[in-house]
Length: 153
Image (cartoon, rainbow, N blue to C red; front, side, top):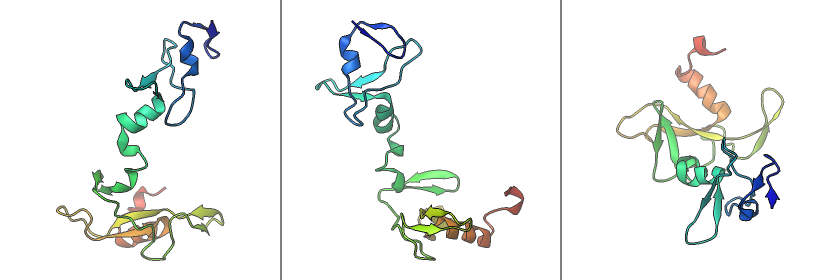
């Protein structure tokens, strides 16, 4: 008989320790309050998904890396788009996604671009938008009065 290392209990099903997640290759998964390991099977095959991968691909696929760049924040709501509106280059300073630079605190930082709304148009959420790096986005928000000084700590 096999013994579960974490709980110390004997396992009835010997195949439970031999399962691997076919998405990430891990043999670890979520263990519920009763000590049961949660695996999700693909019925026609003998493949399994761990709880983490199942949640990523099926429970909430919006957070999957393929979908995250197809969303924008518009008036405190997430709007899903059909295609990625980002180019990966800041429209003001020209920095590219993934480039390294020295920030104001003399630390190495990596460029991450964001969509910035100059004006909000209810009919077309992408109208009047530009793509900015984080530092230009903050500067532009201050310039347009979109950041209230009394809320900054």
